[in-house]
Image 1: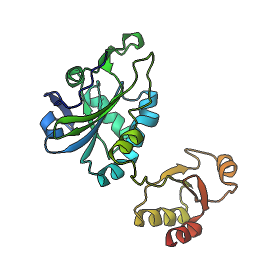
Image 2 (image 1 turned 90 degrees about the vertical axis):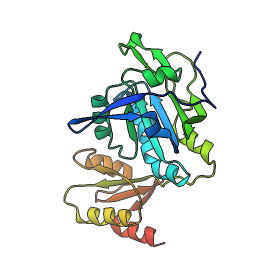
Image 3 (image 1 turned 60 degrees about the vertical axis):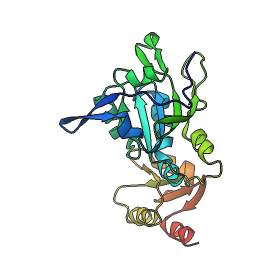
Image 4 (image 1 turned 180 degrees about the vertical axis):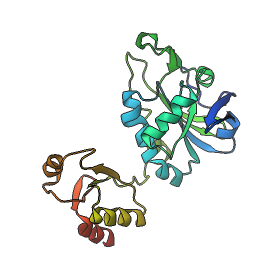
Length: 243
């Protein structure tokens, strides 16, 4: 039976982190004291659900969490610091603080350490998220204790909905671009000036012209989609932003 720690202090421990060519020691007080923090913990870096959904959405919604009183977002896993550092770079997740609980000390203290030896993982964290207020657990979302790796309640949107059900979500913006495209550069500048983040799909690297034609019904770049609706090229984007 996994333990719900709501109303209790988080475990006290120290995490060895590697920054550049130096070791630093980060204590739980450094992470939580006097702060309002969202922490989500997952089975492993570079694993499918963790990489495709769990981490990216928290990174994407970081500014929205900040607007709603959250000081930082922490991603924790029973992995070593070198693995977590590489995963952060691979995911471009600059809005999230990565904490390696390599020995599982914190995770065990939270009652979330489980045996995944059947997958060759050994002891790992069960998937969960929590809101921590000045070191005290205010709310926990613990995945159901069923076989496999459930992902139903520890996601970023569920946590944000708990903090503020009326929080305004950022627009989902996707841009098809190609290298050397001047209009693509203009569109990126317009989005940056408006303070809007976006996903970029680069032709020749991430997709083909056939993909662009199939999705956008056009063969020129950029092609921009906002909240699933096609806006068009750079001119149409500037008109959209002006309105």
